[in-house]
Length: 457
Image 1 (spheres, rainbow, N blue to C red):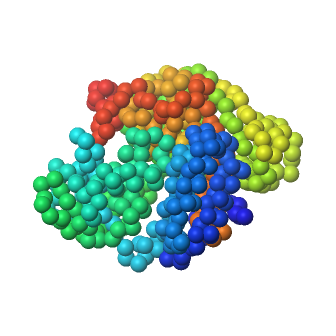
Image 2 (cartoon, one colour):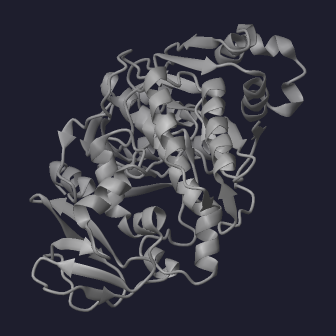
Image 3 (cartoon, helix red, strand yellow):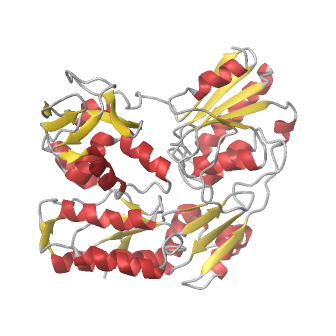
């Protein structure tokens, strides 16, 4: 039996407590049963038979006992096997416990090139290392073996996204997959003996990448007298009213100034509520549009409750007749428990003011443009609302999302979330690729600099 619950962070887990083989097997079965119960299509990428073989091998390979942290590492492989980036678990409690006791992390990221792995970004004061150094092994294990082990615990849906995540977050994956602590014994291509490398703190690791205090989720700036930059970092941090207020004020100012070129920066936008993305498009679209062609929901009693709490204001839930005016709520209301509710999206008209002053629109995207951010990119591409510039987005063009159901496993205390919807891109094609930019730039190239050159600035 596993317990479904709503909410944010996991409860405190003491990672050194030991689990028996029987307890681990029970939790693995609970994880699979929870996915089968709540997910809109648990066998989308793996058949039921493949699931059976994988789980038999997983449970058959369990030792007599493991710490909760070591078991979490194994349990996460189940979700990676499933290959749904929104059905996932988090290491919050384990990582906090490690940081609180002064644990340190590997001091550099890596890059994969020329059939080898090289040091990339170096953190802290590490002597004798440069980005020209090819890594041969760490702690006696060949780097190719290390990467393969990390791949088993990276569920980004596509191989190139796995590679980017592993290489860019290599210090995190060293801790996550191996639990190694410094000093690390690293062999480079030109070194005969291992070189001892010290670790860095979590604060040092995140210092450069941490958002500056007071950084706005949405911002407007000007590139020149005829071009403006609008940055939207996500579609979830603030209430919907915050985003709509920003859109309204920004586009009114753009119209007043006679701006002809708009650059929308969605690099690193990790998603949120797709309605916020549709609201954004309504201010610059030149034709009716929709964020998706259809959405399918897995309906269960728990899902109905969670959906209502998130999308229907509490003071309105008593008015059942209002559900008829929301196509999602109405389809879910009519569906029987255990079935799929299908919603065909209607096209939305752009705001009248969007047609008064036609503008050229560029949208900057990258591998970290995820979820609702990726849906926004798909909408722009399929309706030709602008020109996408950068790298492919961070998930499939049609994908499983809306993880409205959370579970807590009874023995390990591990929590995980399960996708309850499937969103099909606006053109109706559920392909197995991410959204491709109209202008593809190599990794490391600055999309904003590229567009500014196109604009003549």
